[in-house]
Image (cartoon, rainbow over all chains, first blue to last red; front, top):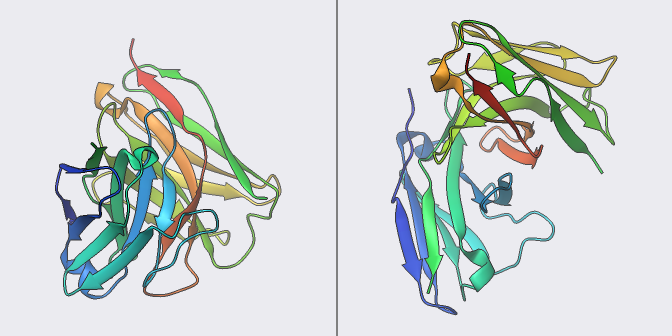
Length: 107
Length: 123
């Protein structure tokens, strides 16, 4: 079955730029989507498709992809961006897979 | 706007069947272009996709759970449901229902989520 690999933890200084990556074979064919989850809350979609943000998501969030790697970039990280971030994609069988998650700390 | 709400028992005994329902409000579950999904999250762990269903009844299941999972849809009630059989303590988790936008073949994404419900498996 498909797998998506993320770094367990990443930190960024307040106001700086951080990139969170996700690797997996399915990403060669399918776009990743990205979810932000804060403690005790449901995940929230922040990036989908080539580089699309749902309504209400700040434009400091952006997405990109190359080969088997997808990236979520936060340009000018804010304290409220501290959260867990999960990538996700479908595979050729129509199944879904989530990455293991990256805990983002804003210093 | 469309909202999803999970409901069901918060405590299930080992070997029994876990049953949850997700009620969709503010929109029709029969709208094309969406799958309706269940995801779970073990305490302190990551997200695990369980499966999803189209309003027509077409389903996809996580291969690791397929033998124990059934997802069904009731369009008349605007609900879809999860049944997970032969549960053990390892099935203790927060269970989320979510809508999956499947209108593009390269990107299916979970655009709406319920708040989640904790199900504990214990005698």
